[in-house]
Amino acid sequence: MAAHQVGSVALELKDITKRYPLVLANDHISLDVRWGEVLAVVGENGAGKSTLMKIVYGLVKPDVGSISVNGTPIAITEPGDAIAQGIGMVHQHFMLVDPFTVLENVILGSEPGSVGQINLAQARAEVSALMKDLEFKLPLDTPVEELPVGLQQRVEILKALYRKAHILILDEPTAVLTPQEADELFDFLRRFVAQGNAVIFISHKLAEVVKVSDRVTVIRDGKVVGTVATKDTSPPQLARMMVGREVILKVDKKPAQVGQVLLEVEHLSIQGKDQKHRLNDVSFSVRAGEIVGIAGVEGNGQTELVEALTGLRHYQGSVRLGGQTLPQNARAVREWGLSHIPEDRNARGLVLDFSTKENSILGDHYRPPNTGFLGFIDSQKVEQEAREMVKDFDVRPRSTDLAARRYSGGNAQKIIVGRELSRHPKVLVAAQPTRGVDIGAIEFIHENIVEARDQGMAVLLVSADLNEVRSLSDRILVMFEGKIMGELQASQASEEKLGLLMAGIAS
Ligand SMILES: Nc1ncnc2c1ncn2[C@@H]1O[C@H](COP(=O)(O)OP(=O)(O)OP(=O)(O)O)[C@@H](O)[C@H]1O
Ligand SMILES: [Mg+2]
Image 1 (tube, protein in one colour):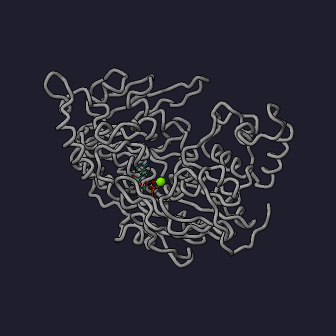
Image 2: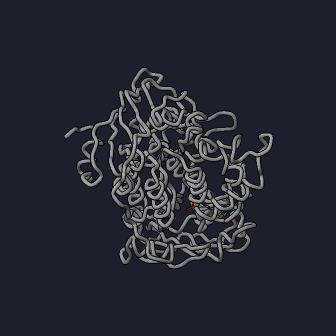
Image 3: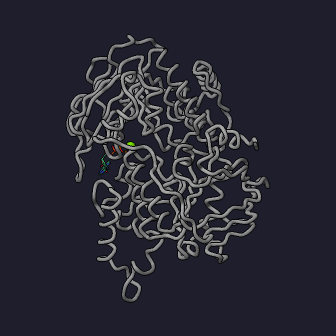
């Protein structure tokens, strides 16, 4: 890779401004990233981070502002222009073609060889050499759909670097990674900048921002609040700059006052297509007024468990809600009073082309209180409730008509959390409820879940974030390879104890 003048400005943005009908997403943003550094960009949900990065990559056109690479102003009107300048982007929602192999995905769109004839041997040699250089191990002939997310993300990175990216942009790359995968990514980023490249890294996890970056630029309401050297800052200080107030990262809750068993799972098993157990004889219960957390490395059966409980997947064994055995379908459990915050918000939580108002009644649109006379939707009532929900859950912008896809990631998540809690469920199954949400909003969502617990809701919390599981739960179950490895009171669940159980080692 060509060496650049370490310390000189790689990419400079000046006065970037972008107005959407309801918000000024970027308000004269100026920042720079230098060769040899990782610049972190942080800010609340909706602060304008993704918009800014899409502008740099040619996916969104700014109203005003200029971009320079190596001191030379450039025009970027489409991703091809950005790629030509050595700018690469790893999207949060991967843009890979699932049935294609790793090699095919990497070279797609820039295949070597003449028209109509791809020189696969040459491509393979080039990609292999690049992987060696990057210390990446990837199975070139495996379809990407068979790879875990951590490796899929590596394919995205490889793809950008195959196109000779020297400035790499990553928008919330660790939201879907396990802690170990995240550490591997950070190792790579440090190696990459040590070779004289530049990285822009967006994350809501301030501990990792402090770990991986050299400088941090903070954005609030579309404006730059400031840029600080990482060595001179700390997560609490960054939080203050982001939110404009002190953020208490500790959940404040009273001891649980438990009532009757509301969710009772016995001998629950699910077999995969390959006849292997995804869930293997799982039994536990959750009572009114308590939060039971499921800890575990992702992919150990948590997804299947949530799908079974919410009626999205068939299972063997028994699940009783309030003592009743219900049909294994989503409508039946929802009507009984179970709410679900799904892990994949875009696929399961929202209809992206629907408005906030429409999304706010998803799953309950066919029955009172959302319907009135003759079963028609009572649009006035729905509008009014949606307006309240948007206000209570601080969804920004405060619209009930904006399509879900036009919200920032964290605000889309707030719409789902708001909908699921506003219907006052008896049981809440929450999978990764604060993924992609800023720290101020995490505090807020946690407070709401605890408040609902105190009013007698039973909560099953599944989260890849150990801190979240430890601080929110009353009891913790650890899953490993489809089984419950052990149960701990949250007060006794040290990181070490949890770590051992998560690795399949029973104490
Ligand atoms: N296509 C669009 N149409 C209308 N408004 C939009 C559009 N895209 C983004 N916005 C608005 O611009 C603002 C900034 O959004 P952006 O996605 O940049 O935020 P973000 O800082 O990346 O937030 P998050 O941390 O939640 O991902 C938000 O208020 C969002 O609703
Ligand atoms: Mg974003």
